[in-house]
Every structure is written in structure tokens, then in C-alpha cells.
Length: 450
Image (cartoon, one colour):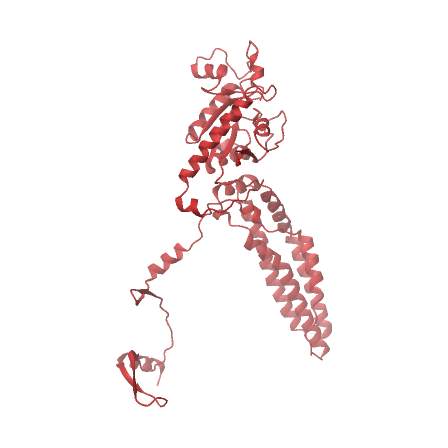
């Protein structure tokens, strides 16, 4: 009788519900509550169904619910930073190759093989397989431990895009993984060919050819590993911002004196030179006040132009303001010595103030000792007869409430420190209000990377 006929009969036979049964071990009857016995049947196919427990009963789970559960367990974008400090140490490609060749040479044939030809092809296959595994093991580690850019915090995602170039991070990781897959595929093929050798000499030749081919592949495509090593060094050197710690971000046009103020206010030691874009990345310093730490961030200068025309250094500054809960210390240089005219600084200031109006804010006019001269300096881009009253007022006095300071003569520095401490205290209160109650209770000690 065919299996289809048996399957048809299974659906027609009734089942019986047994309340009692008999056994040879125990004489008499004993109860088995609501046990159902079905006739034995055979089928060609088996279909599995998932069930869920609802009020003590098993109910079939619909495909829609299963899909929703899969979506619910999908990775979520991280709301913390510090992924770059967890990157694995990447070895130079030449070191990985030499280490793999050295370890593969230690392989010995399986014991007990008396025939010389069989022993040699066994050794050759194991040698090639060991080399393949030693070459691909580090590559697999890199692929698994370098984070998916899409899942990073927006701040770190911006750092990757603006520092390494958009798409370069994923491209290098993809090339490393392609190298791994290629070595695995070719290595298995070569080991299989060596194992099929019919003589000792043939096994030796195939082993030599296989070793050379694997080494050539790795040397040819191993540049991706070296590029990944440089990426890891670059990202690991990035400053980590503690999202729960109040942060002061210094913003302004290039060379207005931001770096000098960072050195004065915090532990940060930025490079200070008299040319634009001295700050070529994000620099982090710290302020200690009443047994508490606060962060100070020096950012690259911003020029007057559209966002699509900005370079990556300017975009870094905008990324910090957009993705981190920072207070702003905007630095103005009304002397024009920085290379950006006060008129352009005024327009930059208006744009940034409007875009990030929700941030706490302090305005500082730097180099005030140079403004004590009776005649102000006018540059080519300035128009002394400009009838814009706001701009005329800005060129003389700066924004309303701005604090005038001079790092050289120390004018206004003490007042600036007081204002900064008050601003950071307000920022701390704002962070505590925005922080969920359960997070406040369960928060663990933070690690700060400088």
C-alpha cells in the first residue's frame, strides 16, 4: 500500500480517548487523564507549526506574528558611545601571512598511515587546510568585531563618514571579508586536490603549488587588511564623549581663538597656530569643578557658505552640535585678524544660533586687547557705510551680552570661568531632567577616555 493511501486512511480513522489502561508491571487499572491515541500513519512530507501558550493552552502562531517577532528582535541603533575603543587590534597583513605559514608547517600526517603516498597526501591536505584556517581566522575576527556603521550612535557614525569618507569603512570591511571567502574557497579546493593525489611525488607537487597560490592570493588582496589596520588606529584615537556628562562646545570661525580658550579652561592641549583650520578634528578636554568633571570640546572653524560646500572639518563641528547634548561657547573675533571678516562672522553666527537655538549659549569676543585702538580695522570684505544697523552694532560691540576676553592680557578670563561653570551647571540640570528615572537609579560608573 502506498504512503498516499495510508495518509488518506489516517484522516478517516477515529481517535479514542482513554481514561484507563492496563499494564503488565502494575496489575489493575490506573488513570491517565485525557490522553489521546492516534493511529500510526506514514507521510511523505512533514510540516512544522509553531505554537504559543495562551492562558494555559497551545495556540498556533500565525505567520504574521512570527514575522513581527523577527522584526522586534532586529538590532537597534546604539544610544551610547565608545564603540571605537572596543575595536580589535589588527595585525599587518605580512605578519598574519608569516604567522600562518609558520604554524601550518608544524602540521604532521595522521598517525598509523604506513603507505608513503597516502601519508604524504594526508600531510599535504592537512597542511593546506591549516594554512587556510590560520589565514582566515583573524579576518573572521575583524569582520565580527568591527561594528556595523548603521547601528552606531549618530555621533560616531558621523565621525566615520567625515573622517574616513562616506562608504570607505564598509568598502574596506567588505574587501577583507571577500579575501576571507576567497581563501576559504581556494584552500578547500587545493586541499581536496592534494588528498586525491595518486603518488607521493604528485602530493608534494600539489602541496607546493597550493602553498604558492594561497600566498599569492593573500599578498595580492592583503592590502585591505593594512587599510583596516589604519582605520582602526584612526577610530581608536577619536575622543569619546560621555553623553551623561555636561559638555561645552567651542564654536566659531577658523582662528578666532577657540583653541587658546580650550587650553585656558580645561585639560585639553590643542595645537595653536595663526592659520585657518588649525583644529583638524574633535579635541576633548575636561574641567574639574566641585569634585565633578565637565567636558570641553574644541571644534574646527566654520566658514560662511552653504552646507553642501562645506568641507569635512566644518561638517564635524555641525555633527557635534547636532548629535551631542552640548552647551555652546561661540567665539567672535571683531578685529578681523582671524581672516574672516566681522560681517561674515555675523552671518555665520546668525545661521548657527538659529539652527541650534535649543542649546544653552555663551557669546565671547576674543582678542579684546586689540579692540582698544580708536580706529577699528576694516578689511576688503567690509563696508564702512553699510546701513544694516544690526551688522554695524555687531562690528562695534558684538552680540548682546557678549563677554570680552583676552588670553594675552587675561582680561575677562575670571568672569568667563564663572560664566562657563554656571552654564555647565545648567546643562547638568537639563541632562538630569531629560534622563529617565529608571536610568538614574540603575546608572553605573562611567569610563572616560581622553
